[in-house]
Length: 249
Image (cartoon, rainbow, N blue to C red; front, side, top):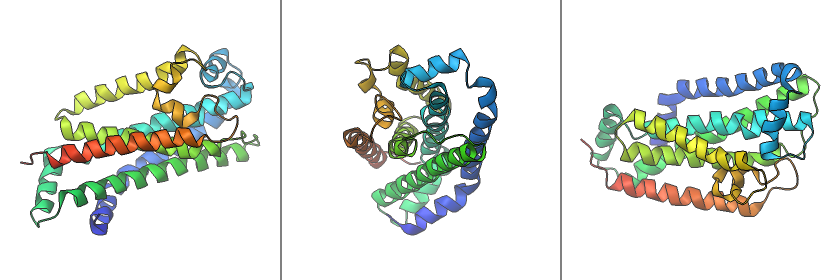
C-alpha cells in the first residue's frame, strides 16, 4: 500500500466525509430531542423488541436509535456509497489508469483505497458512538450497559457493507443499480430480526454477528466478530480479484 495514495484520497474526499459525520452527530441530537415524545410509544417498543424484547423502554429506545438503526443505516450508507465511488465512474477510472501507468501494481492501488475506506468507517463509527454518548450524558440519561461493547461489531459490519459497495462498484456500471441493490441488501439484513428475535433466521444476517442475539446484554461474542472478519476477508479478496481483471479505458 502506498501512503501517498492513502493521503491523497483523504484530501480529495474529506468534505464528503465531514458531511456524513455531521449527519451521524445530527442523528444523535435528533434522537435525544425526540426521546420525551417517542420514548414510550408502542411502535418504538415493538421495534426495540425486534432486537431484544428483554430491555426496558428506555434501553430499548437507545438500542434502536444508536447501534441498531442509526449507525448500521447511516454508517452503512456511507460505506456502501463511498466504496462504490472509489472504483466507479469515468473520471475515477481514468485517474486509476493514470496511476497504473507509472507503473504501479494494482494491489497497491486497491489496498490503499481499502485502507482509506476502513479508516473512514472507523472514524464515522467513533463519531456515532461519541456523539450518542455525549448527548445522553448531557441530557441526564443513563448510558445503556453494553452500548460501547457493540462498537467493534458495528465497525466490522459497516466496513463489510463498504466492501460490498466496492465489489459492486467494480462489477457494475450503473449507479442506479447499485442504489437499488443497496436498498434490497438493507431490507434483507433487517428481515431476520423482523421475523422474530431469537429465531433460527437471525444467523442469516451479518447484522446478527454485529449486534448479537440480545444486544446490550452480556459480553461481546468473539466468535461473532470472527465471522464478520472472515466475511470481510472473503468480500475484500473478491473485490481485489475483480479489480485485477477490470479493464480500464
